[in-house]
Image (cartoon, rainbow, N blue to C red; front, top):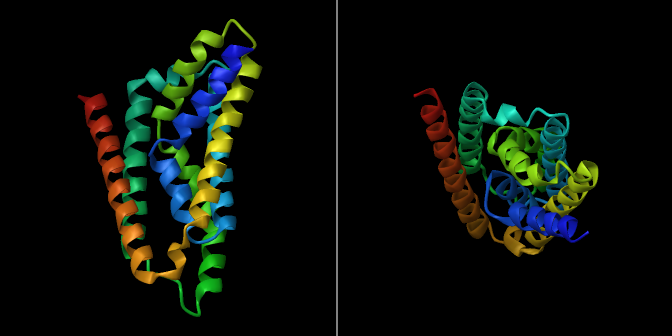
Length: 199
């Protein structure tokens, strides 16, 4: 039982570390808690897809250089796109706040899903962590790991929504720019991964 609890905490703290997924949830939590929860649900669906690949024995995909290269290239461009959106995003303190939220809520789930799936390292992460548990109850291992990850992202969503950034346009604008720069950094890392795999 201790091994499963260890998996839970491993998933929890791994999800809390800065990365495209946690940044995307944090960014949307500045808009509304509903947006943050929608982004969490999109990311968790992506995790289900990756965990399913591990469960059904496709974890070797994460070691295939062509798969890694293709997903890294897609992910690099997608994070570049998210960085661009964050840079040009205007604050929404004024009268259009409700329209802005509605517009974002229609797209945020899909964007979150694509953000998660654009990171091929997630498959490597899951397969490397779960390898020692393949001889044990793999479903129970997946469940504990997934619950830890889910709680971490919901924690980020709740924490971010409590930060009163949306009361100050200047602070919100700075926060968006910082997040955009971080997206650029992760985009660069994925492009580097793509170049490394094709050489």
